[in-house]
Image 1 (cartoon, rainbow, N blue to C red):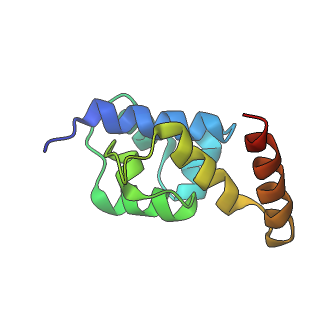
Image 2 (cartoon, rainbow, N blue to C red):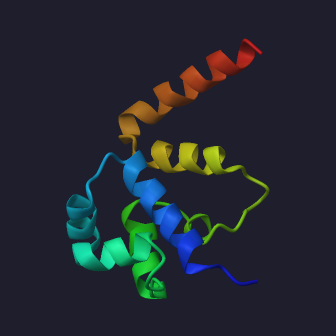
Length: 107
């Protein structure tokens, strides 16, 4: 299976925007230059695996998400929910679970 530079770049950009970050903020957090990030997001330059791995670790996302590989038949929005849940303070995780249980019972 081959994943294009453009597809991976779009995922990185999407993830950056979901986190309300500028390219400069994102590049500082992931230890890459802003110009390299721009080239990655536009599919001009392939993203080295080490960079993908670093982004994955920094934002607690599976590498498969950034590579566009469906994992365990989870939809994209489900993967994002997991990523956001992992960012929540441990004290609040119980409340998040209670909230999701409550709203799911309405359906």
